[in-house]
Image 1 (cartoon, helix red, strand yellow):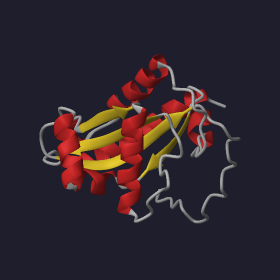
Image 2 (image 1 turned 30 degrees about the vertical axis):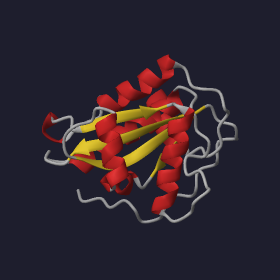
Image 3 (image 1 turned 60 degrees about the horizontal axis):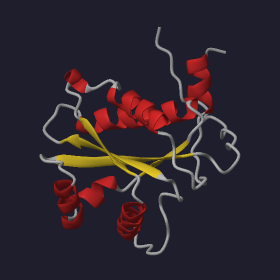
Length: 174
């Protein structure tokens, strides 16, 4: 099977990670895949905030858990790297652009032997006063919407099997 198709068909969400930090070369490859995702009008509206500091990972986990009212859990499953993907609100297709970037990053991670998972609630986190203050602290200026978070690490679990695909999901009009 074609290597790209193999990656697309076999990538699964990983929710248990080794404590070891991923390599800079793997991180940069995943980010590059995100940066090269298609975007509406080639506006490249997606931006990426990489968090690897253990203190900031705990803070981000706390913020994400608070959105769903579940203090004390780790919505990032102990991943040593998280990448928040945001997009400029005034672009043509900001959410779509960031979603494509996230998809590219998840697939690139799998191709590199990393585990990954898309985590929600970035929108709520970065709409909050605390989230806006963090963006400013990190040097992110402008009007952005949080779209999702890509968590990355070396898997500490078997890759799950694919769920059966939904029937009647493809329609042909020839």
